[in-house]
Length: 239
Image (cartoon, rainbow, N blue to C red):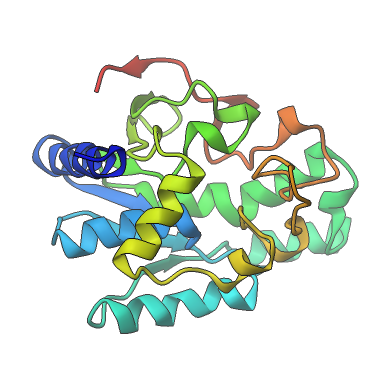
């Protein structure tokens, strides 16, 4: 068995265990390459794991276009969308300005809290576990990532089935299986978030260097995987 085939088998086993032991469970998709690999595995495997995405109101057109591409490629499947509360967005913009997230880490995290963290809480409500496309190789903030973790912020289990996958593994799977992917990846965007907070990277840069590029690498998390400003790595669970 090739290394990639073993990764696929291990990931499928993790997904099957989630369905068996941790239902109901949902997958939080950013519609980027890693998440399209998981989408392909979940939908082709007909696994009972719901898929949702956070529509922050500031996504690239190419990212939003992925919703229709998924629907077309996977027989009409529609990814559920969770949006920020309009009142909270309006209050932030009125008080701080539309792009106040450039001013400080605190302002950026508050914008992420409103546009991503709060909607995530609603998306996860009522579930026992959630799935992410995070990988250890993505950045310095994710080197201790485990396949299965306790999530004290949401009082549930979080799974990172692709934790062991490399960038090459992701793209080899996409090519081998004809998986649709975000057009921004062909324009130098290995990691994709909101449009104002994401840039293309230079050769040799970390794959997440284009995310919040004006900040110190150690602060580059939006808050979805943090508690009290710290990454959620409190208790790992043996897979």
